Image (cartoon, rainbow, N blue to C red; front, side, top):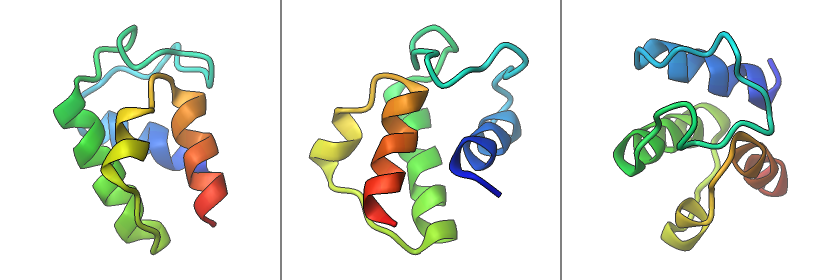
Length: 74
């Protein structure tokens, strides 16, 4: 499963509607607050066996930012 699909599934599991989700979607547009983001990225860390710093988490403003961050860590 690619990172975008994993992320989409994690967001859906949190009750966030992802029907119109694209990599260019901003986190604000789809209603992800900082707590949601941290929890989703913590789950990605577990699934992918990677670690994100606080600065990296704070730098994520869009879905593509998250996908690119994961790609750098793999």
